[in-house]
Image (cartoon, rainbow, N blue to C red; front, top):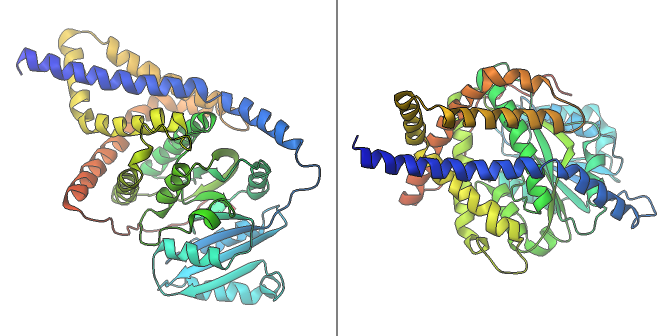
Length: 421
């Protein structure tokens, strides 16, 4: 390669690497402040509630062919410590045994479906997609707080009680739960478990900045009066209805927080193909949503959080651009290092990753997770498997955008959430 072009490409690689390092170092510095901010917020809110605060909570569980894990999901909700709770299961035209399982379960527990104040409501409707199923459940719910979740997810016992604490603050319109990948013995499963651990740790920084903008389908909660009553229900035609609703709330000036103590466990993909299908839906949906709400980028509108509009969202797009050139950048970095004998850049990259492992191990919720440090030497090179998955998905998403194609529902073979509940 011509030296001139090599230097140009190397310069761009250094630019992208430096930009990403700045972002993640800022996040690492800010994230530990989440605990302090939450403690101060709770102290302020405690003065507002002298009486017990136990609003009705409706949990919507949309299900399509989820016979493997549906009952485990329902049981985890019924075991929750929060008393004023209704569980609404919407079977979206499943063709497997999930309907028979639910009917048998309810017949064995008639106290759950009593006429007055039932704890469980079950609906079977024609298949119309997850968004329509969620809307059906919301329309038949009575809760002041509406929780949406996936049918392959299990809540920990105090998750909903912890969740309600955040809504004591009248300024909070939406709450994002802490999602963990349940035990999966496959390499892909283990990598996703670490990926979620790091990714949700960075949600601390988003919350500190007031810039949380993705409420995942596995665990999200909304104040009915300020979200659904004001902004309408989920977009039933959108295949990534959770992403669309997330940014819709931020576009119209609503506030959200990350709830690290609202813990749930979800099933991760166990194959590369399943992972690609999952991430393709997420990435294409994010691009479509960014286009729909593009006016929030670099917005001066008072409704829009400045950190979100001027830092988090632009950096998200920059990260996608960086990913587009990452294979070239990594190749150039390795080539340059071995030809010149200068391994400083490579060493700095490894050092940054090690610092990330250290911070997450020390400051994660509830307890030290020192075992994460022991995983560092073995796992950080394997994260490039996920990088290549994201790269493939990015190219597919861009081709779909150029061709004007919409994403189709993608599924993988479910095995159920293991070792939880």
